[in-house]
Image 1 (tube, helix red, strand yellow):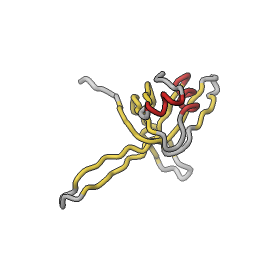
Image 2: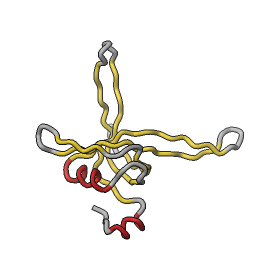
Image 3: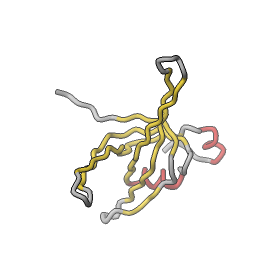
Image 4: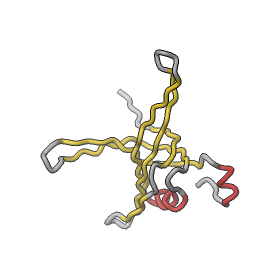
Length: 120
């Protein structure tokens, strides 16, 4: 059976980016993304639901995001889901989904043009 692991999200960074070097010398950038959805509940009231997603970007694209983005800035990302699994200090099995970024685009392009930034 065929499968597809593709994620497309638009949201705002929840914290400043963190860029570090892996032992291989390859840079990796980590940041959080808040993605909201508006909907009407059973009573017809407008509600907002927010999902918080951890994102990881490797190489040049990670360096670029680390340099140009900070907390609160909107971004469009394309990537794939990755499941991290580990065991806690108490022996509990833990897991967490994250997005490994493949590509991004600026969302606030008018501001980017004024600053001299372009899409990568």
